[in-house]
Image (cartoon, rainbow, N blue to C red; front, side):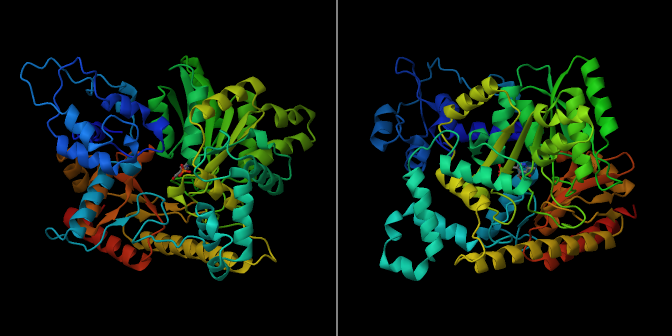
Amino acid sequence: MTPTHMQKAKAVLHSSSLPFTSGAHSSVILRQAATFPSSSRSVSYKNSNSLTRQSRSSPSNIGQPWSSSSTITKRTFMTSSSSSYKKVLTLDSINQNVRNVEYAVRGEISNRANAYSNQLAEKKGKLPFDSVVSANIGNPQQQPHLAQKPLTFWRQVAALTEYPDLIESQEANKLFPQDAKDRAKHILEDVGSVGAYSHSKGAQSIRKHVAQFIEERDGYPSDPEMIYLTAGASAGVQLLLSVLISSSKVGIMIPIPQYPLYSAALSYYDAQPVKYFLNSDDDWSVDVKQMAKEVDDARAKGTDVRALVVINPGNPTGSCLSEENVRQIIQLAHEKSLIVMADEVYQTNIFKPKDLPFVSFKKVLRDFSKSTKKEEQSIADEVELVSFHSISKGVSGECGRRGGYFELTNISTDVEAQIYKMASVNLCPSIQGQIGVDLLVRPPKKGEESFELYQKEVDSIHQTLLERSRKMADKFNQLEGIQCGEAQGALYLFPSIKLPQKAMEKAKEEKRKPDEYYCLRLLDATGICVVPGGGFGKVAKEDGTIFLRTTILAKETDAFVDRFGKFHQEFLEEFGKP
Ligand SMILES: Cc1ncc(COP(=O)(O)O)c(C=O)c1O
């Protein structure tokens, strides 16, 4: 979160609105901050109208003193010039780690894009484009320009679990296939109601299905008790980091470029990012020798390097690790005593399945047990591994449902108990998110009524993503000064752009980083919202080379690349050749 965000957050609290949260527990901090001080203090709340309006629409106010307008009226005071009340929440008083958090995919550029969207919706003023294309975040179902259609089977099961009376109704026979009804019934037998808390690790039957999925994928046993369902992979990553970061000396290795969840969480938990660099000239490959050196150097400087984050397939790079790469990384983790955090949320977004299939860290880790080298066999049962998966990506793209899981491998029982305790503090992940995980790991099988349609939808999404990624990479490569590797996986392209010297100077003059400047100009001219490479740790080079990340999700790919190409050409006409 940048200071600008914080100022906004402050403004939000000031106007007495409460942001939505995923439950009372997660909103507790904001609530405490915004709760009425005791009546013994002299307080003034001038903007009681907005407070009343917000209190009706926000679910976060349940059980709060301002949950009814009459309460507000009773508690509304006029300003008293003699008030001794001083704001408790100021930029200087809040947790300073919060101020240090940066999250580029939802930063200034995306805020400006939102403002443009509103402007277009309200038909206020003229803009040089008629739509905003959010290519900044891998959110496939976002309307109207990405608009990936939800998988039918998913939504059928979700609908039936929401409204169980439908399952046995006559109408349901016309609308829902039998296997969707059976699945909904089966899920409800365990979770009871989607409105009830489940086990803190998630519903047991769903965790069993996750374990079966992992066993089938990897060929090794998986224990449902070591599986935690989460509100998306983000929640799992943050839970794990919160447990393993015990002081500000702790270092976590993160790739550069990286997905900013990691840098943001490390800032928040006040740990040290220990960067390892992916090679942009070689499909963003990892250099394990260099990684070993980074660990040694950081340790020599007193950093307690504990974990190694690997994102495979990569975000923002779109690269996929070979099985050999994964082996080397696990060997490194063994040699240097590091926990591996394997972010595998894009495991089904694979564009070259023959050459670079997805191979999980769990499988490669367990494969060490079969090594012909005796000294390697112990690796399988020693290296601690946490693997993350999500319903937000893949072909489901159910980002808003907030579902995911992590699996713990070789984590000691007493630490696992602490992780369980911390998961319990959050009570449970959303039940619809958990149902999404069930659908992710147990799609309709051949012979079942929904199989054909499901397969057709899945194939079409894979094909569309592949075509879009190729088309976009081809077009980028036709533009002067732009180089873009073909995506091997995930949902992104990460082209490099050589900027003209004059553009670099102009960016400096405007006190902007060159990549930020280019992306803002792109947005202002075209409505296309992308993320500057700096947001992923890939800062502009002295010679004017910048990076940006775009998703490959825009529905109208031709219009996207045309708008982009026209902008780039005009940019070069304005500033000269790179
Ligand atoms: C690499 C990576 N990990 C984790 C996440 C977060 O996913 P979720 O929606 O499951 O929290 C994302 C989202 O874009 C991602 O790209």
